[in-house]
Length: 318
Ligand SMILES: O=c1[nH]cnc2c1ncn2[C@@H]1O[C@H](CO)[C@@H](O)[C@H]1O
Image (tube, rainbow, N blue to C red; front, side, top):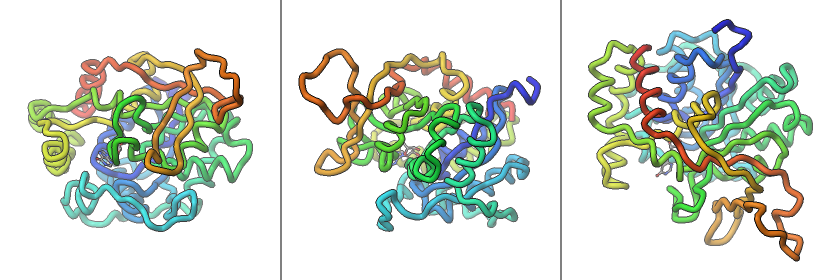
């Protein structure tokens, strides 16, 4: 596939073991051209997310791709962050303590880079957001044209009609999500109701390890912590492929089915973080918080065997 036909994507990421897998899948997919990584706290603090993003690009031999560092604070300027190092290890990459990367992030911040690239290539950039959505919300606030300029935002976020993974209400990425869901851009949300269907088993990991794929072998080194966490928290002998599944939605959307509607996010109280889709089936008498807000697409089903096979194949070809 020649350069021009590839979809330009920017991955907003908090690497993260499944983030590493998603980045590698994207780098090995002829359908897309990864034009930048932006970093955010979530699985690790933002500073470490930036180091890990640079490290992963060095592992993949793609130091030509710029990394823009994101915010260190929540959208409400909070500094008390919830960091999921218990899922990914203290270093975010399976406690391997890799040497620090040689590369440096670019001068521009993540929201500046996102707004700049969307303006430079109107309608052409797909932002794939794999972590908390603060950088995307900041880009929306920084540039009122961003929602119009960006081609599509494909985000991993929400737990539509299933329990969250932070608590029964909330999935891990939805802080700042209300701003993104209601910004008017073309948004596709892939929630854990979908990503929990895509499971890489221990056998699949053995296949990766036995392959000649350089990146597949690297991932097998870091996956141990992620498997232990899933055994502990969910009692499954496999791992959920949240981020790699979401990456595929950005360029192979037909692997999923979708519904459409207005999504709002509860921002306080015991159900803080709850994502609620209004399916447009009833005209309410009252004006509600969903009235006159733009609709987004929400993934409902996934062809899980096909998604798993694609992820495996692309990693083993690496
Ligand atoms: O139990 C968890 N708590 C917090 N974050 C998690 C957990 N499991 C996975 N992730 C991370 O959050 C995103 C999916 O919600 C994924 O990016 C995953 O790396």
